[in-house]
Length: 205
Figure 1 (cartoon, one colour):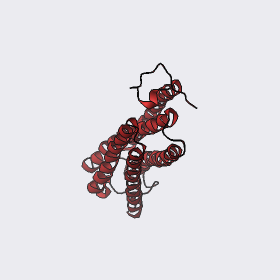
Figure 2 (tube, helix red, strand yellow):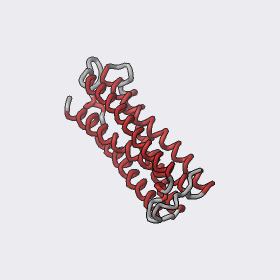
Figure 3 (cartoon, helix red, strand yellow):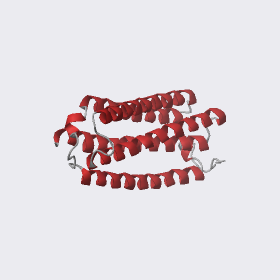
Figure 4 (cartoon, helix red, strand yellow):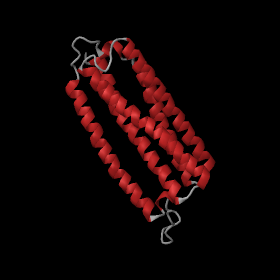
């Protein structure tokens, strides 16, 4: 259990009031750096395979800009509501914090629903994982991001249950803050997916 450092100013956010909390948050930034390297590698693989659509449908034929814009709006809005949850946490308003977290998760679930629906549509149109190199790269990149969103939703639900059971402490506040960093990171990655995969796919072929 994390203990509050009595030398810390009372104005310090709750998640930073214990030494363990500060170390964990710092360690998570390092973890996000490793995640960034992972996605950079997957993006590089995708761009190497981009254009290798011989014998299969072109992305410009199948991508739906309206659908993609809605998915992007859902994730970006969820990032905003995640920030509102942290703001409420720092005001020690647990009920409002949980409400904003639940809204964030609903936006995330909406994103996942639309992504799965899109995958089903693409497969129905003949763009499967084995159709060609481009579609393999597409499913690997977007699927990896979708898997991270799914894991994030499950993780955040467990953290909310801990807050409900234990209350808002430096330890649970640290977990809420770290999960918010993770969520913002996923939105950051999606911006690159949106521009590098969908927009370039629509105009580049």
